[in-house]
Amino acid sequence: MKRTIWITGVNVIDDTAELAEASQERTVFTEEALLIEAASLTIRQAARSGLKPAALAVGVDGVVEGWQETFFKRVLVDGPLGASPLEFPFTSPNALAARLSIRFEIKGESLTVTSGSLSFLKALVHAAELVRGGIAEEVLVGGVARGKVITLLVGSGQGEFCLEDFGELGGAEQSLYSIGESFGAFTRALGNVRSCEFSEQPIVSFGDSFGSSVYFRFSETSL
Amino acid sequence: MKNIEVVVTGMGLITPLECGAGTEEFWRLLIEGRGAVNRVSLFDASPYSSDLAAEIRGVVIKPGRSRWASFLETALGGAIKDSGLRLDEIDSSRVGMVLGTVLGTIFDKEAAWRSGSAAGVSQGGLHLEAVNLAGLYGIHGPITTVSTACSSGTDAIGLAYRAIKAGHVDVVFAGGGDTLSEMAYSGFSSLHALTDTVVRPFDATRNGLAPSEGAAFLVLEERGRVEERGARIYGVIRGYASSADAVHMTAPDREGRGLTRAIRAALKEASKESVDYISAHGTGTPYNDLMETKAIKKVFGKGAYGLPVNSLKAALGHSFGAAGAIEAAACLMTMSTGSIAPTLNLESMDPECDLDYVPDIGRQACVKSTLSISAGFGGQNAAILFTSPGS
Image (cartoon, rainbow over all chains, first blue to last red; front, side):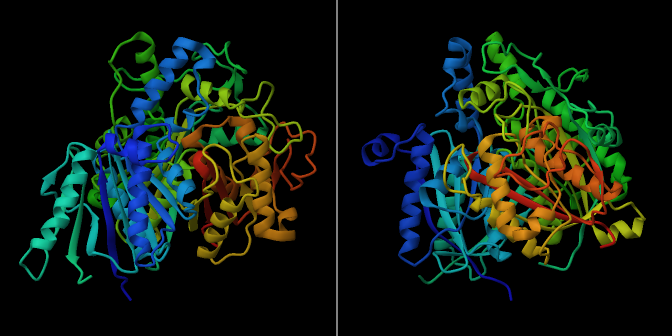
């Protein structure tokens, strides 16, 4: 029997000043703090419906490169003493997913997608595949751009939006030139679902400048 | 999932051992017990706690291509040729690629940072190279780049396996690659994780890893179409799983609980309770090797003591995102040739690492099923299970 896949707890955060006041987390980098804050919100929202993520899928682009440069330039200046053991793990793109897994004790699959502007949306497709395949019941999905993050929960339980269909390829209506742009495009697509007058929701598709694309078809639930 | 069998029909690699001379040469040298760990020549390692690494020497980098891209191109080209696939004869929109890497073009970025030039420093470079390779070979299906630290290569193959199994694509080129870099070297040095003597996986005196570089790709196909074209099958992928320790940013779960979950899930998917051989992650660091040994014992119980387990990292060093893909190729060569490669430099047994690690000399064995396991920073774990084509 085909599983119904839900999306819930969508949060986008890019206000670092507000976060600095609110967050009690000890973090190394701004985007790490943003991601943990957004994930906390998503997990709290999901917990109201009794949902808890068991796996992770995070899309990252354009952030880790900056951390690598900072780390290495310090080594160039200070030699071995410039290599910070605290910052070194963050030169690997999976560091953000690792922080989420540790912070929220998520012990299932943990994937980091680094596929340019489609990284977050491909992470979402991967998460939906995990749910559809019965590998995980609920997956925390994140997207990380410079100074901006998105989190949401994909699951088989219940949620605000039903993910009727999804996949890769199929042509793209909207071209995305950065991962940050994909957060806005995705949340607008969900907003359109709420205001749509059609009984059959249209497919929304997003592509990158290299010809890759992903598509989704959502519907609103009665929750 | 649909009842689709996913088989491996081609392999291509480049490692510090054979320096791109082909999979057969790689395997011959590995079985002979040759090693490639030596003094670093790509950068000045004298300020660090070690000066050992495994480099690919004599490699020709094409103008305008990064060191990393050259490795990937060698491995992918070799895999496609080995598979006998004619890409112009198949629906290229049903052909995909999954690339695993940790640091991608870092070697070339470092050169640019040293010189103060912005040339060669491209943002989003991890995915650009996958796209370039797809363009080079006319691959028009889904292309994904993943980064799960040192299990990236294994996860790339596992995700490709799932994509075929789900019926999304017919053929996927999957693998991983990374280069040596001073950034990684300095980072591991800061964590006191580099050996200053030799890499000794599972040995009582093991004291660290030797960074390395390389790339490997496998050609994965749906079995039915392979049998139609009469191609050679190296092995069948029966199960794959990954997990997170959720414990520490750099250290593994000391009890191997995360890896245990990944191995058990891969075995369950394959409907198997045991295998004939395990290719361990075996970095030569105190924590990793003990954690892996504990995980293997938890999963296989008393049967663990009769299982040959080896680590290739004493011979090849640790090539990060490439390691899992290279070790997957070694698993397939083990089944094809009936030879298990040795774990080099294992001289004094650690009382807690008391499995059969195939020390120093390779051996002949009838291997019909293999498990390749990987672990990485951030508590990443992955396990993939292959069987021989006839089993």
